[in-house]
Structure formats: C-alpha cells, structure tokens
Image (cartoon, rainbow, N blue to C red; front, side, top):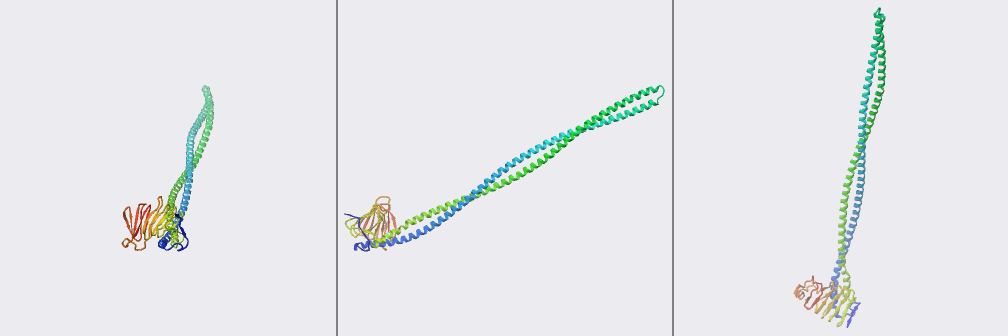
Length: 436
C-alpha cells in the first residue's frame, strides 16, 4: 500500500512514543541550523552593506570618469580651435610675406626707373649746358666780329688816298662777318633754349621716379611690419596650440585613469554582489532552520507509516521515520528526511535532499537519486560520540576515510559508502557529501 503519510499539525499529536528519538534528533538539528542561519544572516547583512558601499563608490567613480571625459573633450575642442587659429595665422603670415615681397619688387622697379630718369636728366642737363656754352661762344664770336667791323670801319674812315678804297672794302667784309656771327649767335640761343625743355622734362620725370621710390619704400616698410606682426601672431598661435595639445593629453590621461578607477570600482562592486549572493544563499538556511524547528515541535511534518510506502509532496518536505521498518521517497522537492531505528529503505528521488540520522540501530539503505542534485547526509550522535567511545566510522569503496569526530565533512562524489555505528549501519549511493 502506498501513502503520502500524515501531516501532523500539533506537538505530540498522533505521534506516539516511537517518534520521540526522531524529534529529539530534529531538535538538535534545528538548533545547529538556527545557529548557522543567524551567522549566515549576519554575514549576508554585512555583505549587502559592503555591496551597497561598493556600488556607491562605483557610481561616484563613474561620475568622476564622466566629468573627467567631459573635461578632456572640452580640452580637445579647445585644442582643435587653437589649431584652426594657427592655420589662419599661418595663412595670414604667408599672405603678408607675399605682399611684402611684392612691395620690395615694386620698390626695386621704382629704384631702377629712378636711376634711368636720373641718367636721362643728367644727359639733358649736360646737353643744355653744352648748348648754353655754344651760345655763349657764338655771342663772343659775334662781339669780336662787331669789334673787328668797328675797327675796320674806323680804319676806312681814316684812310686817305689809294688805301681808302681797300680800307672800305675791308670794313664792308668785317661788317658782313659780324652779321653772320650774329646769326650764328641767334641760332645758338635757339638751340640753348630748345635744350632747356628736355632738361626740365627729364628733371620732372626724375622727381616723379624718386617720389615713386619713396612711396614704394613706405609700402615695403608697411608690408614688412605686417609680415612681422603676422609672424608674431603665428608664433603665439603655435604656442597656444602646443599648450592646448599638452592640456588635452593631460586631460586624456586623467580621463583614462578615472575610467580605470571606475572599472575597478565596478569589479569591486561585482565581487561584493557575488559575495552578497553567496551570503544570501547561505542565509537560506534560515528557512531550513524554521522547518527543522517545526519538525522538532511536531508541526508540519510528514510521518511515515510502518509497512507502507511514504512519499513527499514534491515541495520542501520534512519526512519523519518511525522506529519500525520504513520505506520513504522524498519525491521531486528538496526534502529533509529524518531516519530512525529499524531497517529502513530511503530514496531522495529528485531535488537537493538532506538525510539526518542520530544513533542508528538497524540496517538502512539510502539512495540520493541520480541527476545534477546535491544530496547530503548529516550524522548527529551528540557530543563525545567518537570511535573510541563506540561512535561511528565512514568507509568508501571499502576504505575507511573518517573516524567519528564531533564535527567535520567529506565529499563522497556519489560513490558507494557505508557508515557504521555501534548498533547498526547505513549504506548509500548517489550521496555527494557527509557532514557530522
């Protein structure tokens, strides 16, 4: 006959004297679980406090990193603007130097024109001087000719006799010569007067050329001044761009450092979360302790019936054995099964099951069940229950691995094991760990 057992809702009711050893074992187990649960809850609270602090630090580090990146971005924008200004300053300097070069070319051309006009003016002046000299000589020659004519006429007037005719003739020739000399002097005056105009024109052109040279010099000087100012501005822009680049690099380094600190803070927070999660998992023992205390008080437990198969509900059941020969199945939930005396056959089936035994009398077989579950046997025989005082031993594949001490654990990795007590044995399969 198969039964799901009776769920007892009050202390001692319907249990009979045969359940008291199991309840006593459940009480000891519950007390141990309660101590573990209190410690785990305290550790979980501390772990969550550490995690909250770590997350606060991580958020602060992220904010610092964001601010540092914003500062670095601003520095890069400033550097970009500084390079734009530098490019413009360089372009202005190139243009200013081109203007200065053109101004100096214009000055050189004006100076060449001035030299040529000076040469032309000098030649015109020389020609005018020569014409004046020729005119002066022609007037001198005319004056001498007039003097000779006057002398010849005086001689002719004074002559008498046969010499008088010859003297008149000579006077007449001298007068003609003086007349000719006057004509030559007039022509020389005309030539001198004609030479004065080219001289004046050449002087005017030379003056104009010198004025152009002066203007070109002024423009060249101004262009040189602008080019020098453009060079200074470009040099200043170079320094500003270099300073902006250095500042941007420094801010980049600060931003990278801040990002590294934020990443580290995030890792620390993740680690704190993991520790808090682990602490939470350990703190789940609190609910197990509540269930164990309920079982110890006779509340909410499934009681086995002698001679019947007892099955859990598929939830987190607490199943109590009897002093008789029990057959118990934990079903699909995470069951806690308390063994007792008698020759019992216990199967955990699916789920993470815990099998609790006190001082075993009889021969019991436990199968934790196949699958990726963690099934644990806990042995609680009370203080002083070691091998020297008739306690217990654990053998795995025929090899003794543990003599009973008061506390300890061993990973069995699902092998076939046997536990010996003074009054009985428990052999088991598919068990992952033994605790005592």
